[in-house]
Image (cartoon, rainbow, N blue to C red; front, side, top):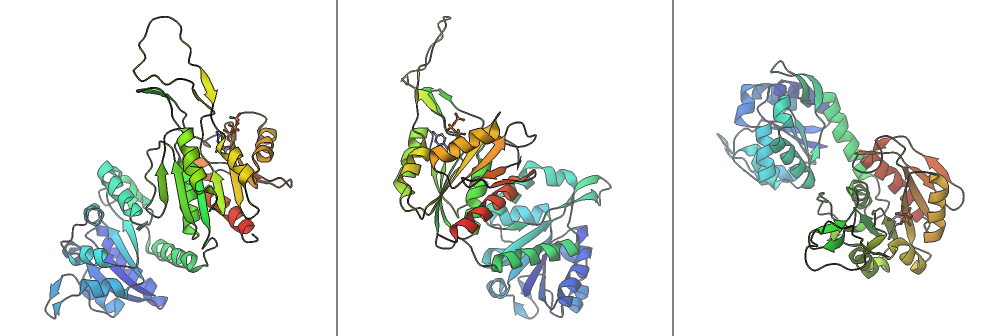
Length: 397
Ligand code: CTP
């Protein structure tokens, strides 16, 4: 493995000698890049001795111009550790004023960052925004540790330990070299709430954040599926790997799904679709009169049930059921009525599961009596479990 280790100016830079040593011991070839600030924290001589390559800390050096494009193409992984708030900000915004940011912009390999900073700098919305932006670009963020910081404060912001960084990169490379189980498959995912207008400023909606559905769509894409995500009003910004169709109402969601359903191999219905919509939508804001008022509602199309009737044998359909009571029998009713191959049951009685939380607790049920209950996990991990179930079932279709 060829690793470019990019070091920026943080006290955690002293740990990069050990990090370099760990990789070299594993027979990786390591080349080190340093920002000018990093050279104040650890000597380039230490790192060139350990890596057995000259350390590059400037776009120009005595030996000439350092070709950042070539370096970016040479590596299998660019690992920026420690990544300071300043370096993260530069990478997130395309600022290219040192060798490290220049190589980042030219790199075609996987990029990992191991942030290191004081806890208030880490928590600051601008840092968090930059980290999210980098994740959207496909950069892998190695989680920060919690503990004593150089400032004397205690909290989040410590760079991950060298052993953790080596393990994180190794894990990623192992998983990414595994065969993609859904390569060549097309998948449709519905996610988020729908909003049914009453007048130009009001609507009937629900509390769905879209997190579970978007996590599922991303996970399907990671397994090589070509994903169409039909997303109701949600603050989330899905990655560019997905083809996202934004909709507002259940009718729009149905139309977007119907347009592509026939070409799909997999359809996952994770949206919290409004069952009813106002019969009449006022073109002007409804004025208060002081008297009681009624909004007449008419049923919306059941997207999953309607598409379930058009389902072909090779198509795999997965539904969700969010229940408050008689969870299992309600979910089984929906499974049979809508023609799902399996249904993912959530209960509002489980703490930290369902709407708005980053965690979820699910049970998978199928028409043959399968019942798999999972513990409380992050929505990403839950998405991976559901996609694993999809992969094992779509292999035989
Ligand atoms: N669903 C759908 N279109 C609708 C309603 C629901 O596609 N108009 C899908 C959901 O995305 C979910 C499944 O059907 O996968 C079950 O949704 P849920 O709202 O729990 O079921 P309903 O049939 O609406 O039953 P109820 O609201 O009475 O519990």
